[in-house]
Image 1 (cartoon, helix red, strand yellow):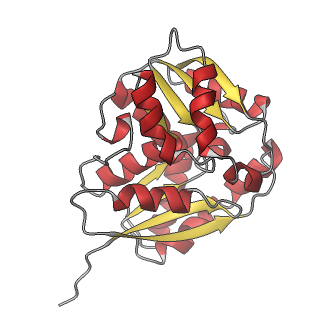
Image 2 (tube, helix red, strand yellow; image 1 turned 135 degrees about the vertical axis):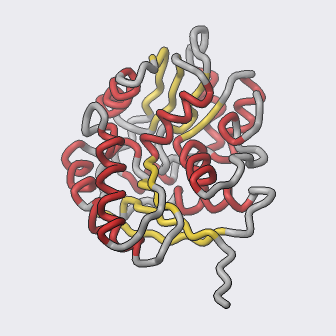
Length: 250
């Protein structure tokens, strides 16, 4: 009899990404019930975070999906939020359909999510319509995300752009600086805080402390993606120290 205990998670990530492949395994490792996870990635070329490079990244979607499908994964996540949001209205729905089609052509029926779609749906789970966000992006790309969220009925009441356009440099940002950034946000109208609107910007160690300090729900692109992967695998989306979306009330 064939025994297969760990859940296999397929990730499509930019070639220069390092954070999602550390934060996501750490989040899922904390799950109190799951029998374990393995992670299987395909990489799409990305160095600079600019509209042209992001477009080329999205163009590699089908190739990358087929590669992770070969690992017979149980769920697939497309892990680059701004690459999707920069493509305009409804882009995550189109992207997730493309990924599902590419996986099906490779005889893989795993459920699909994207970090952009997970963030939108995560905000709906929390029942919030006004948020403050911190991004590593240059201001025009942060504005793309603000407009993207607006298309789903979410108003960004304040934002901080850290103006980093080298994707490798984004991964070197110190998460210890995030509480200070959160303190700079105007939260008078905010119902929640997206502490890292990018799966490449490290934030995991700051999520729960910032939530505790602010008394508001705090989430990130990574925690939103983790929630959707857990639910798609039939697991409760509860992770200690994971912030509002992972079962920790503010």
